[in-house]
Image 1 (tube, rainbow, N blue to C red):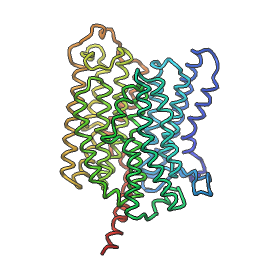
Image 2 (cartoon, rainbow, N blue to C red; image 1 turned 120 degrees about the vertical axis):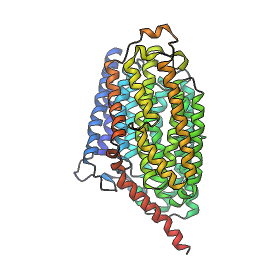
Image 3 (tube, helix red, strand yellow; image 1 turned 90 degrees about the vertical axis):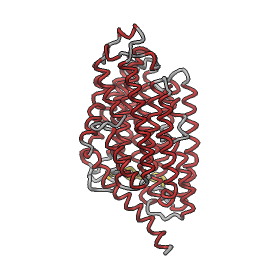
Image 4 (tube, rainbow, N blue to C red; image 1 turned 60 degrees about the vertical axis):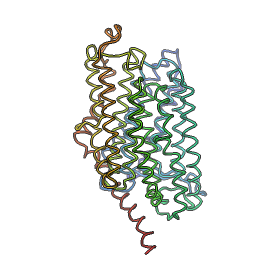
Length: 503
């Protein structure tokens, strides 16, 4: 239990399952069941969001360690326990998960009309897995939640997705499962060596350099696919295109962060020498991802695919920052992860607004939207500016800090990343100009209605966060500061030991 004796993290993690159970017990005709399922899911997710704000207000910014800890025996004979906790690295991702879930439920209010009860249950199960993964302090528990996310996301894409939904769902499942099998082998190797699965205890373990290399590659196989890094990113565009709008929001907003979070929670602190050795390799893949996927985005005629490729480029910035091993780079990467979750999620919502009205995502089928939907055009512009890292929006502070940290490691790496960011601005402005300002290509667009009150409520918190993070970034960076400083210091100390031994 935490200091107050209140199992807050367990409540945050498993309360959505209670809501899911309530939804499954709803009886009545189809319309009644659908309506009650929507409201039950919304109220459950809002209660979880309200509880997660306690983490925000009660979190000790000066403490670099884990807080709100809970421990229970699970498999004590095997050194595996139920251990939950958050630190400055994970707390904001818990909040991001609990924020996007009610937004996704609102976004699905009218667009999902088939099997509504099962859809809402899948989203609440997904919330449990996401929150649990960011809170897990036992590596076996981490693995359970990390893999558990696949089940509801597989169903959301495979049941409620587009025409090629089954193909996209299986591609997502097989790509991520294959990498995770190798991670399981690394987890077993750590468990055999330490006799414990507790992550804080594993951080004190000294692992031989050669063993670290193999373990790092095993973890890399799982986390690189989840990020996703080039060239194992090909599942992402298909998943985004076929997923329902809310599925794309969660996929871009939270699930892509799980791989990067795995790097900073497990790979870097547990395998410092291997992380340092493979850093140039990570830099190369990251810069290639930023430039290559930006160029590919230019060729896209599907709005969702364009934004999906932009997500690969932005996550390339994140992985680059994580492996700079300095305060600016790592803090910038974490900030970028949160801001990308907000901005990219909002961009997919913007695409969903048009798709719900016209039922096409082809860029060429739109044009002149500003003339008939001025409020929508303004909202879309704000999130486009956030995606291109305009100063004053959420996208700028993280990318600026990552470039600063990358310059300290290698000016050439920073230059390559900056080139990709310029390309990113070009393709996002290209998208915006064609959809919003070009000549209207269809007469039926003139009958479109602007944003509804429900859509305003969906966008409002994301607009607030995009501006807040851009104007006052220190209010978010302060959460990372102590934990990142401790991580960097521990990494440098771990690397100093082999140097001293070789003197």
